[in-house]
Image 1 (tube, helix red, strand yellow):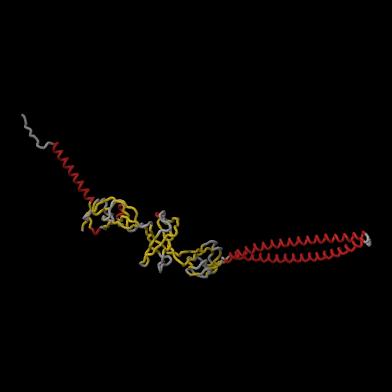
Image 2 (cartoon, one colour):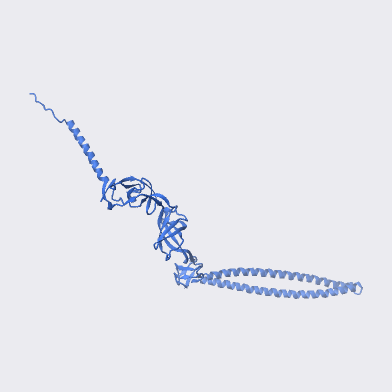
Length: 417
């Protein structure tokens, strides 16, 4: 028997199509609402800081700390080693040039000095004895010369007389020759005596010159030794204040060891530490300023120390114009060091947003002030107050400059009261 089959009003294919479409719509809706919930955040206006971008003068500078120091510091080292025997002044005293600071004792040096003095005195005595002997020898030779002259004169008299008598045939040839030989002998004797006297005089003169030169060398060495002995008494090289004195009675000090320093009180300088990141941009002539007792004072970089220690290098700065009254050695000053000249730029106030964005984007406030949305920006130089804006913002734009730490992936802020 045939059975009547009723026609279905909702075929399975149609039902599956409808269900699929509904699921897709639901998924899209879910995604939309899900994403919309993460990209928007309601904030109160008192919870954020809004800054305005403006055109104005800009100068790049960095804050540094400087310590006031004497304009000149003279270090005192032990020229000679020894044991501290006496201290004449204490650390912190104001001293005059040449004023004794302390005295060292060095027995080896003192003994060497005594030996050199004795050697000089011995040489002087020997020179006097040599000179006396030379004078006595000269006197003997002069006496001998006088005898020779006398004998020569007598021989010459006899020679002339006998020659006349011999010519007149009064005396014999033998007698004449005897007198003539005596005369020639006395002539040769005088010549030898004169040569001997001349050589002795020259030798004595050369010996005296050599002894005198030797004495001068020994005296110069003695002077140097006395100077070394005098250096055992350490004296102030200049007028100033004695600081960092490191010496106690009985303490031994080696040659070249640092004893202390003299700070010249005629003026001050400022020594500052700067991060090594700026070493290529810091040079002599850069300007700085600081506030002291509600007044602004100027500084200028005078010297840059290229040595880097613990990630920092040092500079010396001199005061430009007046020096603050009441400033003291060792006082710390907070200085603004300018790294360039003042120029016109688009300025963005500094804030905590930079830590999360790195300066690549920022929340820009809408014209009605009710929302703030992300915009990409480009920043350049900076100082403690402003960033230099190179792109992405215009004068008059308002932006959220406070911290974005709790915003996560938020894309838009709803600002309310």
